[in-house]
Length: 440
Image 1 (tube, helix red, strand yellow):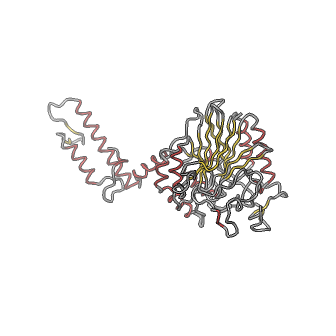
Image 2 (image 1 turned 180 degrees about the vertical axis):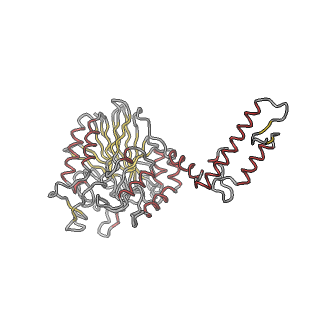
Image 3 (image 1 turned 30 degrees about the vertical axis):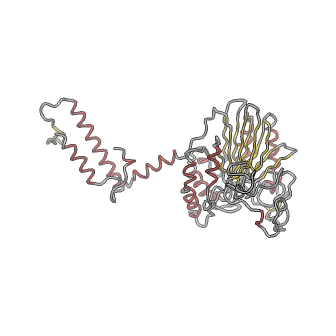
């Protein structure tokens, strides 16, 4: 019998009662076989030698059943647990074949597990080849050594019906941000970072070098497609080894709301030196489209919240590396964290960035009393191309290898309540902002 799919009966943790085991043995004896003095069955006269094979096979099944019951009681092994472990390895859809070119990517950030998870339905309807979770995938700041709140956050998220359904249809890769690391604005001084990292690896069932790598973050690179249609996806870890940002001396001041750029301490780092060396090695590899995932914004210049701007020498190092590697490719940065969405472009490095945030709790226009008008609420930033997107949103990257055009969009997660009154208002999955770029 397949013990992993039998429902438990009574209090026996193996899923089999002692009565069932006894009945199985009685069934053997009821087939016209007797137990001889040597403990083996003796055949009735006239039976063929093939009956011996049936006898031994049946006895083997009965013995196996007794071993399972013995293991349950003596060694405390639960078949139900074994079943769940097998299912856990299969419950996320496998990633696309590396041999095939990617044609579409969806991405987003900032998903609070207590909020409605409608974005999974919108993304599933879009049907991307790949879904990138760019950080703040759950919110559960650690308050004890076991990070109970973070574990509960993962459990709550995992129970959402939309997520359960999406796992069967979406291939997912993920980055870690501060709330994934169990502490708001987390950096290298975070005492919970290793236990939070372990929870992340377990939830997404990651068994590659990110699990065996010690004293460093969860950075990872992927590649899809043949030469001429190759996409390289690089996920950075901007938290595990990051130095402390310089606190602002003008709280809520323009571009200095919480932190200010540190031009003095050039030894501060965003990435570990190991991660920098690893990144340099990845950028040597041939690719037509490079997609860089940073949990915090890279190009933004108008914010005093967490972003690469706070460590200018580290941002210069990154943008130079990406520019030097991008002469024969298109490089796009995907980011999150901000609770608003937006497009950015740097004319000097020719880099493009799309920030998609939030999937569940985007900052509305009227979040602050002094800010009631769209556009007027947005920070001034010469690199940002449009007004902020202040509706729950996810981003998309659509690749047309024939025309070699890449369409970037921020799309609505939810159906707008204005749809019944105004035509042209984005429905769930419809683009809110859109930009097209060309692959060299």
